[in-house]
Image 1: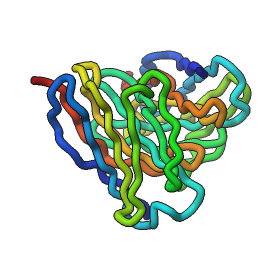
Image 2 (image 1 turned 180 degrees about the horizontal axis):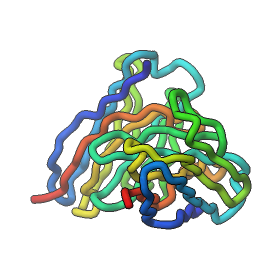
Image 3 (image 1 turned 180 degrees about the vertical axis):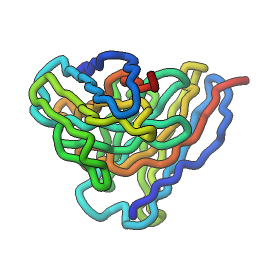
Image 4 (image 1 turned 45 degrees about the vertical axis):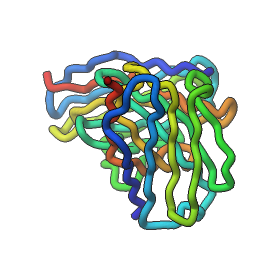
Length: 109
Length: 117
């Protein structure tokens, strides 16, 4: 099983500041990584796939990077609507177990 | 625009079987090379992938749940379903259905299932 870890668990950031979220895989997953934003009472929303490609409608202030085992999601200038939990998820096809990280909560400082 | 909607009982008794259905609208469940997944989130915890099914019936399940999970698909109704047997309080969660295109690109809104007597 590929285990995903995320750090920090909580990130307190002021609006307008930069946020950097980290995700690590227990073995190489190439660029088979997605990031999701999850707000209470809503469905998770795909933000980034292929480690660095923004999904449709995602603002340019969100960027993803990394490959192999180390990945980063950067929010260049936090807006009020960005405060949420962010999950990374690997989709390496073998073994076919699509694990999520434990999440990073981005809250208002 | 593809939309997914979960349905099923919100309360299940311990030791019984949890049954949920996901109805897909906006496109045929058979179009494209997608699989269809169930994912859950217990209160205060993270997301856990339960399993996936292709429209040809092929499945993959999370090894931690495999012995209790059965998924099925009904292409004529544009639906896929989840059965989780022998449930306990630990299975209380919000259950989501999602389309998998490598990553999960479309999700349902989720449905809360509580296991309690």
